[in-house]
Length: 303
Length: 265
Image 1 (cartoon, rainbow over the protein chains, first blue to last red):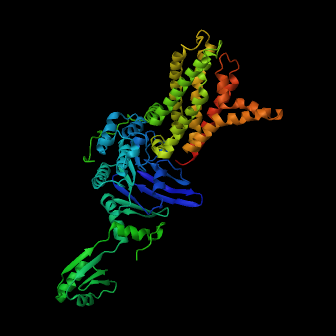
Image 2 (image 1 turned 90 degrees about the vertical axis):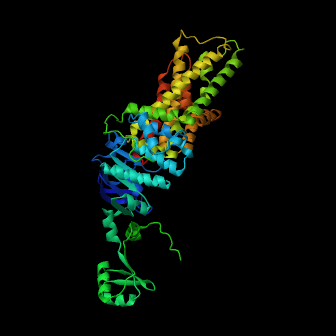
Image 3 (image 1 turned 45 degrees about the vertical axis):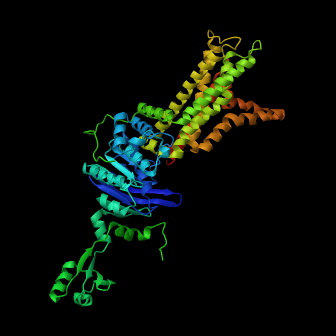
């Protein structure tokens, strides 16, 4: 359980995290979303005591991280894959990390095998690819078999097999009752992994809701209707708050009306329907709608 | 990453705890698994033993020659730089690679991290110095007209032990500047500046008038000169140089601790 209360971080005049409050509950995967510069990484660094909050506080399992008596068995953390000395081999890095808590060689070998870095464990971490570095970072996070996992962009640079492994693994850990907080920019991946989503924008919490609810609230369900007598059908709908936009001859997207109503009206009038498919919005749609005003580094629209 | 659950411990054991002895072990693994450490220690050994041999050869013809412990300790003038640089890079290497974030999440009490790192690297340097002195004593013995008088501790054990301790002190200075400045180049520049450049600068004032002599005099408060006074065989007043050297260890370490404590990692 991670509880942030009015957490604030200022760097001079710039406020990176602005009075953020949230709870990351155990037993589910909580996704941490937000544009670049939204304050996700700063928040994660404050959770594990690397950065000191300007105001407010954050606790892990009810305690300040700096007060934990065995941090590695409480919290596993992957902040960025580069938190490893480039001149040390992966195995020696893990041995040194494990030694701080008296964790033995056996567990080091376990996490090496678990994350699939056995063949490169003897090589110096400086030569690792992004994906291998990510796996080493995840291995380090797992050393203490922790109650809570905090993973900043864990799938960044991983191959599809690794991405799927991370997804299944964090879901498995959450199912065991552990607390999992992970950030990612891959919306499709997040939508398959997270149960609950916290969205940050410009240092503030924009949304904190279960994933399906977030998507429902921030997207509109559209109906794709295809019919040879489309204009006749649209006229028959007679619904004031329905919007209709033509897609191609004989097909239109309609919002504000249920598929049942369209089907009933079409049947009553004897209008044939070739297609009547609801299009549910995606997490990406919801995210973009949510963060539209909070994007700090905005790209230019193409054409 | 093929198995999903993998081997796991059945229950959460409380056996794994953070403790200072564990932290020392971790820091020892870290120091000994870097090539830069072995390079530094190797260079120190080669320079030290090589120069002692040269000095022994060069002075063997002269009747009295140099005090035998001085033959062994004279190379410190140069090896102190390697000691200081090793202390600096052990710390700054963690900052430049981001390792410091792993270190501080494993042990969030930062004072303990500084203390463990300082102890490990200082002891490593001191043990290395002791081995180097032993090798140098054996190798130079055929060329020295008179051997070390082990019956007189003030002419044997004491200067040698203080020499090894001085090497540890130079290393600790580097550790302190490393935590204070974080950048490898900066910490090395300051360490080399204090150890090597400042004594030269101060000694330049000896050509100036007598009203500038106090600057030349003050050179005895520099770490290298304090260490020199400390390791003079038969030296009597050891308190002042000992305190001076201690100050050069505690000062940078305290500043480094303040920086580590207050700054975000």
